[in-house]
Image (cartoon, rainbow, N blue to C red; front, side, top):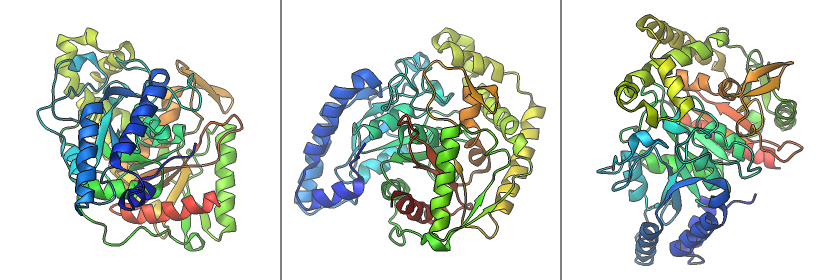
Length: 446
C-alpha cells in the first residue's frame, strides 16, 4: 500500500497544492469506505475535524506555521483523554466517563497544528495483543480482514495503513505499538520510558506503559516524536550511514521460535545490510528466559491494583478474556512483584551490556505474521504455542528495561502479509535510534 506521509503532505500544504480541509475529507472518505469492514474507529470526529482543518488552513494562509504536523489528520487510540468525549479503553466499564480535558500529549498535538480525526479501537484496556477482545468488536487487518491487526493499538495501526489517518498515537506496554505496526506494515516507535507524559491515559501498568506514534515512515515518527515532546529537534533527521553501523543480533531465545516467513525476511534484511557494509555480531541476553515472568508479575501486579474497584463492582462489563486475565492478576503476591523488579534491574543491565560498542540491537518484531482472529495456538518449532505469548515474545523486553525501540517493515510473506524488523537503542538515545532506523529504512527499500 502506498501511503501518504507527513513529510510530503507538509510540503504540499505549504506549496498550496493541497489544503488541510482536503486531507480531512480524504481521510473521512477512507473511513466511510473501509471502516465498516475493518472496524478501526470507535469514534469519528468529522465535524470537529473539519472545523480544525479550516482553522489550520486559515493560519497557514496568514503565515502562521506550527510545524510539520500543521493541518495533518491524526487519530488517537481510545485510551487517551480527548476533551468532551468518553475515553472508552474499548470497555463498557468506562461507559459515560467523559474527559474534562485533553491528555497532555493530545494538547501537544493540537498545539503542533494536528487535526484530530477520531479515536481508534483497541484490545480492551490494552490488555492483549490481537485487538479481538473489545467491547466494540475486533479491529481487522487491512491485508486480510480475517486476521488480527495486532494489538493493543490495532485500530490505530489500521487507520494509518489504510489512509484513514496520516499518523496516530498509541501506547505500548509489552509491544502494543510495535506489534500492530509489524502486522500492518507501518512504522511504530516506542520511545524510552517516561520520555512522553502518560497523564490522561488509561493505564495498564504505570511502570511499563509507554506513549508513542505509529506512522507511515521513520521521518514521520521523528516529526510526531518532536511534536509530542513539544520542542524542536536539535538537528534534522539524517540517515545514519549503513556502512558504519554496528548492529547486535540476540539470536539465542529471540530467534529460536520464528515463523519460516519471518525468519526468511529477517535473514534477507541482515544480508542486505551486510552487503552495504554494516557490521553485524551476535550478542546475548543471558537471562532472557526471565523476560516473560518478570513482565507478567509487574504488569499483572499494576493492573490488578488499578482494576480492583471495577472488578468488585462491575466485573460483568469486561469482555470475558480480559476479565479472566485481570482476575488471575489478583494472585500476584508482593513477593512476586518485588522479585520481578529485581529481575528488571538484571535485564536492564544485560541489555546495556549487549549494546556496548554497538549502535543498536536488531531482531524481528513479531515471530509470526498476523494470526487469524480467534486463533489461540500457533505451530512454531514443532510445537503449539499460545498466540498471545508468541506475539509478546520479542517486544516485551524493551518495555521492562525502558530502552527505546522501533519497528520497520521488512519483506512481506509470500501470502502478502507484512513482517517487522525491530531495532532497540541505548537508554536516552531515541533520536539517535531514529537516525539509525532511517538509514536502515532506506537501505532495505533500495
